[in-house]
Image (cartoon, rainbow, N blue to C red; front, side, top):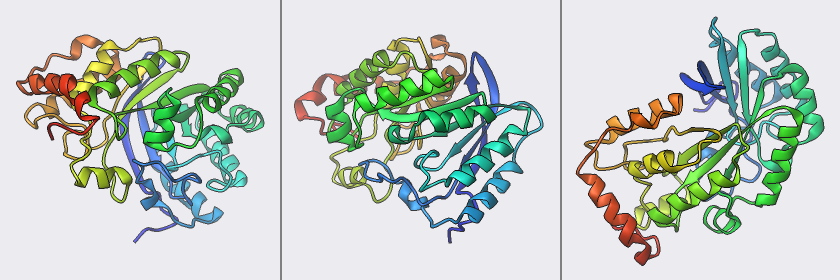
Length: 316
């Protein structure tokens, strides 16, 4: 049973910031959920609860107990928008930021928001407490047709540009999420779309490449069950990381990587390639990609032939 006064998850990892690696605490808070809640691949609605202001502050107290003594970064995710007062009321947001500001060893705070909730006055207030604030936006693609037809994201590239301008002008850091292989795209088209999108947003501080994973209860799962959708190959993730422009910090941490519902190859090489992807995300060093496997030839065939099937997978 979901408890409104406990976060959905907390874990520790490492991330790259300004050329150095920091321990990172990631916390998922249970809120009323994303106001849009209509993206075809998103299953985070399962974490939604009707949390009161008191519940949310109790959740953050649980998160706070996990703060390390050494310098660290903190990601506070709500599966929606941190700046949406429907999810995180203003009083709660201010208190969370105030508590974070009391930790002198907190080097970076990362929160997520849809573009419509990014306002100058909100950022000004937040930055007065946390000068190292980083705001992440799930742009997914620079292509409006793909974003609205394949993903159903509910905003335009111009909306993103306006929000990103506010973020950059405020002095905050900008993180952008790009989706690798939304439904209805072939493997080859998906790779080209991400590479094109990276060029279009080269001013971001960090660009995170997020391969689609199949969440329960989503439209993508319906396609997956009918064998009309396959998550991207890990080779495609490597291809993007190798070929993309490196003006920003480029990272990837495939959710469900190596499973049938996440980015995967043949199964034999998956763990090794996932380790290389994580190593690249921390170092930005392309030479880490050394693994070879016979399934790479099958992937190359998919790139060549799948466009002829209008995105219907050739191999699972």
